[in-house]
Image 1 (cartoon, rainbow, N blue to C red):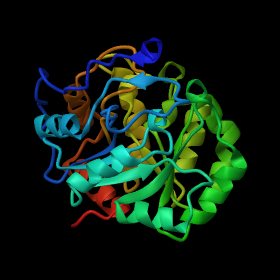
Image 2 (image 1 turned 60 degrees about the vertical axis):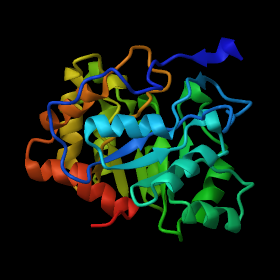
Image 3 (image 1 turned 30 degrees about the horizontal axis):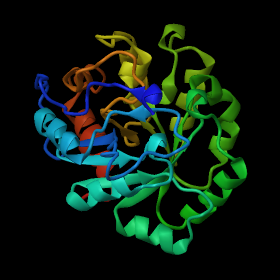
Image 4 (image 1 turned 120 degrees about the vertical axis):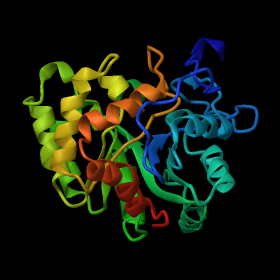
Length: 291
């Protein structure tokens, strides 16, 4: 499978600096991944990429370096609906970790309960073209019906070009929802572009949350062009914004030091209150971490 291998250089999370910005106590990385190790938790046969192993120990080393106390581990497409690597990581630190799973029609009530007992609080659907595009919408609808009574949410991974076409569907969702990576917005088009204005309308809805992470995906170092977008989203929905590292940055073309992403936070979360809500209070409320 070497022809599919994607080398990120982040699997060990070593030899990088500590951030200058000191995160508040109980800060949460609300979007990160664990990959493998493949010998223990094999990757999905139909995956679109094969990552470098980034097991739970690598994630813990990263968080120790950055000063992060909590995490939400998001199931990535390379593991498909086999959520074992994510569940294993949560079981390792159950008071500090939560998860977002990938599921399909094969999951019955017992399987959902097992995920919940394992620390899962949401499901993720990918609409991004280079990762396979939109899901089967019939399956999508049935999964939403299964989770809406569980206190879970649905995470949507979108391309910016799909925000406007999907906005009516998103607005009608009967469950809390979280949009990944600032909608992967094209920062070169400015904050007045229709896709971003539609995103702002969505995040003002009471059931819609947004992750002001992924600056390294929509901007190049030092990520200046991402700042006004993150700031506008935080202003539009200060109580429903989340932040994360996206470690280990699957399919990212250029390496990134996560300390640079941490140091970006005070550039868009301008006050101590803003930062505490973003990093501590909001994820604690959505994921059920202790006060």
